[in-house]
Length: 343
Length: 140
Ligand code: B12
Ligand SMILES: Nc1nc2c(ncn2[C@@H]2O[C@H](COP(=O)(O)OP(=O)(O)OP(=O)(O)O)[C@@H](O)[C@H]2O)c(=O)[nH]1
Ligand SMILES: [Mg+2]
Image (cartoon, rainbow over all chains, first blue to last red; front, side, top):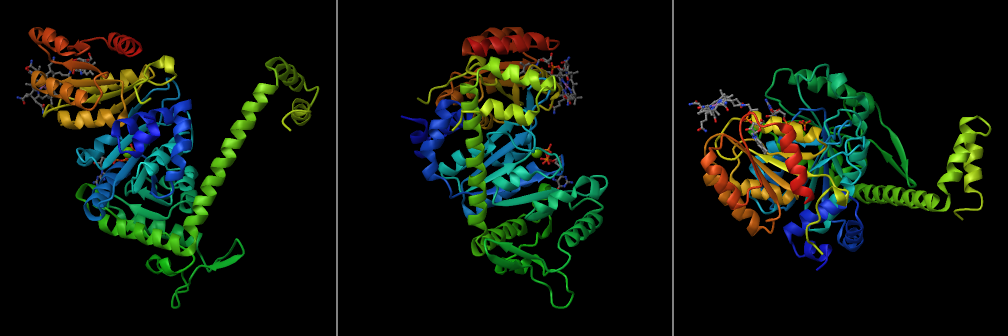
């Protein structure tokens, strides 16, 4: 039996081993991805990002527990931690906070190292989520490396991106960079049991208002979308209403993961975001954008491989040397290398 | 088609699960070993404290590891180890190598090896030896 058949039949060991093949980008892994592709596109992909130690894993643990109990969903978790740039090794510790999920056959947790890739995810994280999607998991939760920068990659992959902050992470503006607001669908202030929640919330709010100061008009695929404005204050309307409108304004929620407080509200907010995406056509747009990026990446890879097949290493070195000697410019060098090839 | 392909010759990283079974709270050794294996270029999944053999077997399956390392300083190794071996076998993972460290009396050492444990290490064990043995066990 092939990997993909076994995975579609619900074989957990085959799933685990296929994930390894996909992570290592082996021919078997790639063949299985091809076979599984028609079965993908059903799972809700939820990204969880934020500075180190804000409680991402603890929150994922709680959210997954709730999805199991309330929705009876099958939940997969992909937890990414950084590889050491010096040794290539890694300690993957997110499972420590997900102890409660152990023993449930409808939860599958997979840890992975970044293996040199920057931006919060590993090269093969997206493909791993595809395997889980095809295997019939209803939700795939992706925890990024704790970096606190704008992790654009996870937003590109996920349908819904949670950005997790916590009080006492130092300067709030520092801890949570402005760019991260652009990827947040929902802002979570975890550790709300800690002093300083108000300050954190205030900081996030004012940043949100900076990001959405007045009515903004978007032109997207010929459609004009407007952010709704609250009639009385002139500020953007609260997020609760935005599932019925074209623009989503990220709500700010408080949670205490270690006491499972605020998790129901978080799940409800995620559900509203999904409803919003479905109504506004955002879901299809995100899917399209993600697949487009994927196609582009694969095309680039294929062209690069072709290039290496067709251009002898020696010739490449000679041309490179000419550039280093400043005999020709890099632009001319590319023309020279490509001439008559890669039609 | 779905059989295990391990080893660095496959171009893959060695993946190790380091677990603390039972109620034993001594976690220094486990952390020292986890860091040493990381510094040797391996990917180490750390489970944290108070793991049952069931939890460890489940994590070993989900993470598709080559090696499970147990750190036991409570004296419960003779109870915990056979159960874990049984579970791994039930899950189709009898090819996973087991390493144990902690406080293990000499008289238990031979019995653990007979059960199928690959390596046993006590206080003061050198992490270089552990790294070498793990590499050897996985590439074999
Ligand atoms: C430090 C220590 C503590 C600290 C632990 C702090 C911590 N977070 O780890 C504290 C003070 C909390 C503690 C408490 C207790 N301790 Co204490 N503790 C020790 C002590 C002195 C050193 C352990 C240690 O950290 N060593 C340093 C590390 C690096 O060494 P290591 O763990 O042995 O690891 C090495 C090897 O074993 C091996 N290894 C370890 N794990 C792994 C895993 C793998 C995969 C591999 C390959 C190798 C490997 O490689 C490591 C590197 O060399 C030992 C005595 C001793 N000399 O071992 C007693 C000892 C382990 N403790 C003991 C006892 C009884 C207790 C208590 C029950 C005491 C009490 N009555 O309250 C409590 C129980 C706590 C609990 N909840 O489990 C006994 C255990 C007796 C037994 N098993 O028969 C010991 C042996 C002392 C004794 N001689 O009586 N303890
Ligand atoms: N007081 C308090 N502590 C929390 C809360 N949530 C998590 N913690 C603690 O914060 C610490 C870090 O939690 P993790 O869940 O590991 O955080 P993380 O963001 O996943 O960390 P990295 O993956 O290392 O970036 C742990 O000690 C948790 O117990 C909370 O709501 N309140
Ligand atoms: Mg984490």
